[in-house]
Amino acid sequence: MSKTTLPSGLRIVTEEVSTVRSAAVGIWVNVGSRDETPSVAGASHFLEHLLFKGTKRRNAMEISSSIEAVGGEMNAFTGKEYTCFYARVIDTDLPLAIDVVSDLITSSIIKSEDVDSERNVVLEEIAMRDDDPSDLVHDLFLETFYGDTPLGRPILGTIDSMKSMSRNSVFNYYKKRYQPEDLVVAVAGNVKHKNVAKMVEQALSKDSFLDVPDKEFHTRAASKSKVNGHHKVGIIERKSEQAHLLMGVEGVDRNDERRFALSILASALGGGMSSRLFQEIREKRGLAYSVYAYVQQFAGSGSLAFYAGCHPSKAVEVTQIIRDVTHDVAANGLTDEEIRRAKGAVSGSLVLSQEDTGSRMSRIGKSELVYGSIMGFDEILKRIELVTPDEIRALVSDILPRPSTLGIVGPFKSATKFEKVIA
Image (cartoon, rainbow, N blue to C red; front, top):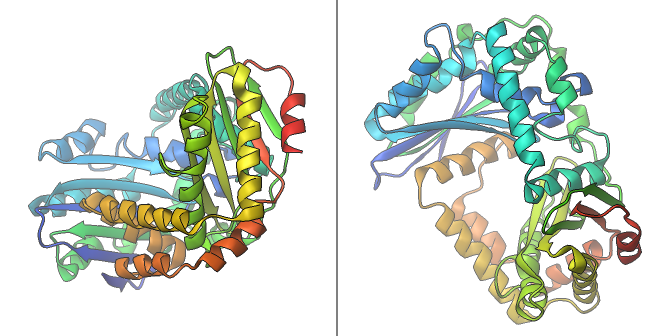
C-alpha cells in the first residue's frame, strides 16, 4: 500500500495488484447518518442519490453512460459514519473513472426539481424497506438499542424528514461536508501510486470544492464519545408469515483491540452451518431457515447481534434458545475446536473477500478513513491467529452476560412474552 496526503488534507491510498486488468476507485467521505440532526435526518443518503443527478459538466445520463460505455460499473452507499462513491473499470479507463467520480463530489448542482423527484425515489426506498421485515428488523434493533440518537435513527431518514427537507438544507449539508479534509480516495488494481496521485490531485484540486466560510460544521465530538445501548424489546406488528428476530448485546467499539476476538466469537456463535446457533435452531430443531450472527462497530460503541427468521408460533422458543446458547457460552466458554474452526472461517472469508479489486479498494479506503492508517493484510491475519482461548474466554465473560436488546417484526401486539425471556 502507498499513501499521499495533499496540502488540502485530502488523502490518497492505493494498492497495486499487477496480476489483474481492472482498477477500482472509491471516494470515501467522512459523513454518514450519525452526523445528522433530526431536521436533516436522511441527508447523507439523500445526497448519495442527488449527486448522480447532474454536475456542471455532465447530466445524469452522461454520468451513467460514461462508465457503462467502457463496460464499467459505478454506484454508491451510505453508512452510519461514512459515504462512498465508487467505480470499477478496466485499468486503462481509470483516468475516466477518477474524473467522473470526482466530478460528482465537487461539482454537483442539486437542482430543486431533482430534489423533488429524487425525494420520491427515497420515499419508495423507505416503503420497500418497510415491506421487507427481514430488512426492517435491523433498523428496529438499532432504534431500540440506541433510542432517539443519531446511531438509532435510520440511514434512510424518515418519511417526515424526507418530505420536509428543502433544497437549501441538503445543498448546504453537501458543501459543508464534502471538503478535501473529509475525503479519502482509494484505488486498487493494476495501477501505479504516482500516476494515481497525479490524476487525483488534478481532479480534486482545492479550487474544485465549494467555498465554506464556516468550518465549525466540521466537528464530530459526539461521534467519538461512548454511546450506551438501551436494553428492552422493540416490536413492529406485521401480518407476516415469519417472525424476524434480532437479539443483541453491547459489543466493543471500532478501536477496541478485542475486535479480532469478537469476530471469532461471532463466527463460532452464528457464522456458518457448524456454529452453535445454526446447529441448535436449524439442524437440531428445524425452527428456522436463516440463522446468523454479526458484529457492528462504531466510534464509541458497538453490538453483537443474532438473527433468526421463524414461524410466529416459534418466536418465543427461538428467542429462548438464543438466550440459552449465549448464557451457556458465557458460563462454560467455547471449546478449543470451536475456536479453531471460527479462526479458520474468519481468516478464510477475509482472504476470499479480497479476490477482486473492488473489495481491496473498500478495505484500504475504509481503514484509512476510520482508523487513519491501513493495517497490512498479513498483519490482520496474524492478529486473528494470535487470539488466544484465554482472550476469547475473557471476552465471553464480559460481553455475553450483558443485558440483551430484542427487535422483532411479526404478527405480535404485545412484547410481554419476549420481555420475560430476555429479562
